[in-house]
Image (tube, rainbow, N blue to C red; front, side, top):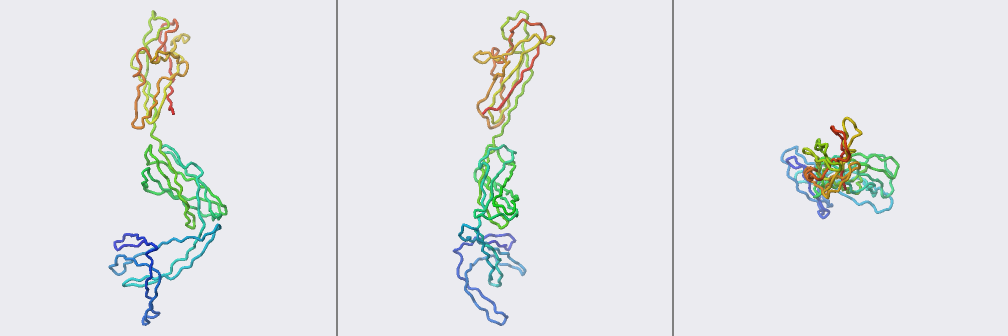
Length: 350
């Protein structure tokens, strides 16, 4: 029961079946001079704050539920309103209860996509399924109302309820729903529960489906490469030797929430004046194994996930003068400047 308190606020009071008891009501006579009569009926006593001024009023609403008839087929029973009396110390009145319908039909929803999803912040989740009546009724063509509530992984309900209209054709026995929800205002690397139910034009409420949505950890993967040079090759340099790097090579990988690998590929360095003269590039690992960059070659990798703040890895910090990417003096060559390009591939790994 809800009623308006004397300060204007709305109050709610629960009335249990056990609260019903025999109460005596006074029925005024037809005329003021006629004596009243008394009648014992089922009712309940409730105390609300007194109203202090003439004109004060309280709006009392009483809600109840009734079980529909047991049947495998839909049955509808109409219930006519009856006279309802109310009596207070200083006021007595009566009214008619509203007509209503008892309906044993059951609105049912069933998911057609996964009840467990894993998406990124900002993605649009979709909750999809079929709608039907368990006792075989057809839809009346009126829109159904969806009600979607969101709970965090501690079971706390988030503020707001998303509502939406769903159209099902008149006369069909099965409909579908596809309810989108944009994943904004949530936290990464946490799982949320979405509770969905539908209601139809006759206020029949469906079962509740629970969808789990995990927000993926924040991910970031970027590569920054500065210019790189090699030392000068003198005319007397031995064929087959590796030419060391010059200056501070910066190959930085910035990552958050992901494993990664970095590979490189290059056809070598070519003489600016005559491109028929060239020298190849090699990657030398810590065991001094050499692999030509003519093929896509693994340079570095990270096999752990940093799910917190961004992590910067300078790949060249692990290189010595004897390993890393080096230029090989493989052929007698024409004097001059040599240039080339290295293609870097930075990718996420599972």
